[in-house]
Amino acid sequence: MKQFGFWLIVWAVTASAQAASLNEIKAALAEPGKFHLEFAAGGKDVNTVIPLTVITGPRPGPTLLALAGVHGSEYSPIVATQRLAQELQPESLSGSVVLVHMANLPAYLGRTIYTSPIDGKNLNRVFPGDARGTLSERIAHAISRELYPLADAVLDMHSGDGNEQLKPSWTGYYARAGSQDVIDRSRAMAFAFGLPHVVEFQWELIEAKAAIWAGSAAVARGVPSIDVEAGGMGILDEPAIDQLVTGVRRIMAHLGISSEEFAPPPEPVLIRERASVRSPADGSWNPLADAGTKVTKGQRLGFVTDWYGRPIFEARAPFDGLLLLRLEAPPVRAGETLATVARLP
Ligand SMILES: [Zn+2]
Image 1: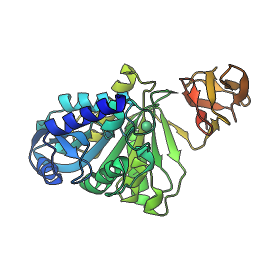
Image 2: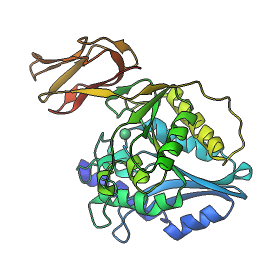
Image 3: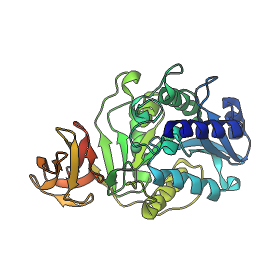
């Protein structure tokens, strides 16, 4: 019954909105003004749309694409892009900003964490997607093959998921993937966003098909890209929303899209190594340490119980560092991350 109701909602959204074609988005990029559009993901077999706002200034300049809602229960970036869509005025801009408010509307409406309720897939693991694949794969394809070619830079904005506590907020970039020029420009964006922690991803994406994350798929196409993480736990986190709104505005100034002036950001803490503690079994998580706090090697971060409340696993910090992320809600499956610790320089 629940599933039936959900399909009705998706149908109603699709039916009531006139989904824009790629050519209409291109026209919006060429004509000064502000355009709220719904972009159809998946060609003829449409059953979702991607709500986006294109804001184009009267002077030429680069195009920034800011993605929110790749994970549907990560609300702070979604709200940040909605606020920017209302606040930003085209008259003052050189170039364009494309704000993707909800990349994964099925997961948003379905209130799911990690995966889509339609195909059970994690949108941030199926890039660059497949035009003839499942719904998540078609969304990924629409973003990477149709929207990315329009962009000079990409921001992929996330939070801790609906069940995850994430602190502090950070930006991340691929330090070893893509050309040196893309690495340098991505690094400059990661710093310009202005958050006090920057994570250097160490993955090498030798083939485009290994770039399964939204941000890495942009890098694989030669488009500088950073990941942003702020907020979590399925709530509207106002300080995180402020950081995201300010960070996007800072990137616009960094790229020359706006002439807004910002003080240079403080030198960030660089994180090159992270380690996750995973649950060995299905069970219930009981956290003991807060994200954003410093932990010492061997410190108990929490424990997992069986269905009867009997402890079956203790999560301990693998090294001294900063607890970046931990589960907030109890349910956990075997192999899932319980906590992530960053080694501090
Ligand atoms: Zn996410």
